[in-house]
Length: 154
Image 1: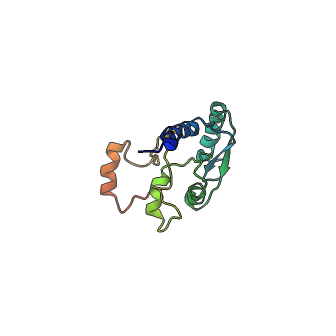
Image 2: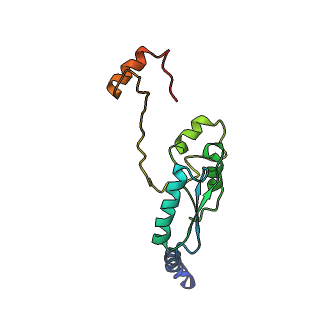
Image 3: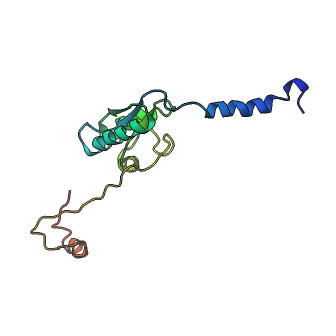
């Protein structure tokens, strides 16, 4: 199989892999890109998350607001960043809807990112004017069907 001088190579390869696993992380600040302007809900969540992660990881988390184009500018910034774990993206459901909204994205939503996990669950609320006849969702659906030419939403 191996000559006497090369017999130790498989063992050396295993040890090299072990050394790679033993590296410290993080050893420098981490950028968390929030692809929206400062002050909005995603930015607020990012800043709060950054405080917790800074304490946990013992390394500074820098919130980088790179807004514009429905978040695609900041998302592209992360897609093109080094794949070293020092650039993170905090994005909402727009990540899954952007391929349907934009003809040509500069990144591949499914293949350019490693999804880490969900950090927040944001409940949505449906509101209407007090004068709207239905008082609940059960009444609203038939009302919408019967009045589809009169009802507007935003």
